[in-house]
Length: 327
Image 1 (cartoon, one colour):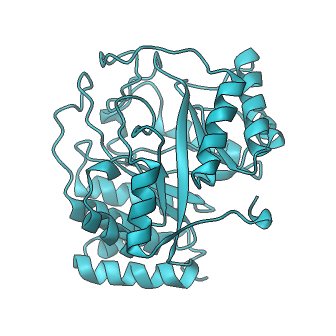
Image 2: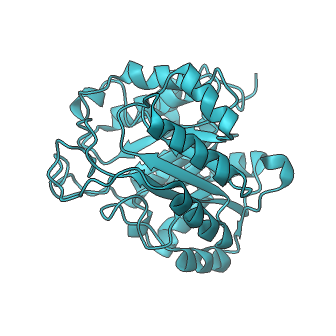
């Protein structure tokens, strides 16, 4: 079995990788990246909050939790035509994957879900890869999303099994794994990663990467988020995450899951040009971009389209272009 197919990584193997000298690790990850991907191509994604705030979950990092006094005002589910207009603007800016996020604990079989299915169908009709993150869902709901044209579903593990209860108590780790299993009954690709900077230890980061790398199959997309500290959340005073920590996570993810797309997600707005270059050298090949400097809500900053086009051009990187066979 090649490393590309391996889902039997041991915790000791992951720890050994994680403890390599940083530049040795980056060089190794870069070789793996070049073997399995066009290292000059970056996937460009845009995320839209289609239903904001009043989420019943108590995730300690989240601006949209009803448990956290962050000043985010709840907004109802968007109209389909408004979502489609936003997706068209994203497509015009070179975005190839359009992600829609709703602040729900789980998907309900109701009129709102029917509206989301319509959104998926119409955005898919624009020639974009459509991704959604709507909370927990059943196998039947996953099937209905697939029939509507959903390409990917994001459902993060967030952190290690051992640290998880320190951040979230309203949803279990197994709940998250069950949703991933339900997705795997369909052809929808899985986007699954996590967040660093929530007070977890190095051992937790190793355990988290090990859990991702032993999912069978690997997630097709692995976002590495750096905590965006939001006033009013339990994690508002969390310590800074240094760039070497982020690079190490990206590089280990690249080696463990060679064929996955590894995304620099939340926190990229804090990175300098050279920081981001090192992330790309370490195997990252996907980014979130935005039309108004926000990834999800007014509390999750994100680089805008123009600055990202300039960044990629200066680095000699190309935004991915969808071919008919990609959809």
